[in-house]
Image (cartoon, rainbow, N blue to C red):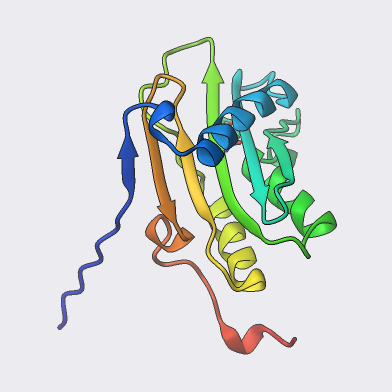
Length: 163
Ligand code: THU
């Protein structure tokens, strides 16, 4: 029997103002994306903003549906928009934030496993890691570069890639 141990690493900042200009701006752009949220069932809005190499910023927000599984998280709305329309322009960073009137969000929300797996796919596609910034409007920001820290057991199988 072998015991394995995996360590993950991420940075924590106590306020968005501690970030460099580009990262600070992207976090504020994620907050702007909240207004596009369609979340009448959870009343929990999530906003995501991607910064591309060209400087272009693209947005996503959670889109819920009365047939619950038909909805989609903010991160994948933004990421699939990139995949469909901007994939020649690599993703440098994604910022994610959330808001609800129901309670105070005390710490950054972390993307669900499906969103992390989609990020992993696009990191492979563009052959460069994505900086992930999770921004809690109460203050705290968590940052890591590369999805592996948040999803060390992402699924990938080179032999399934035919191109
Ligand atoms: N949600 C996201 O958009 N991103 C996440 O990382 C976690 C959850 C959405 C899905 C649903 O619309 C609402 O938040 C509550 O789960």
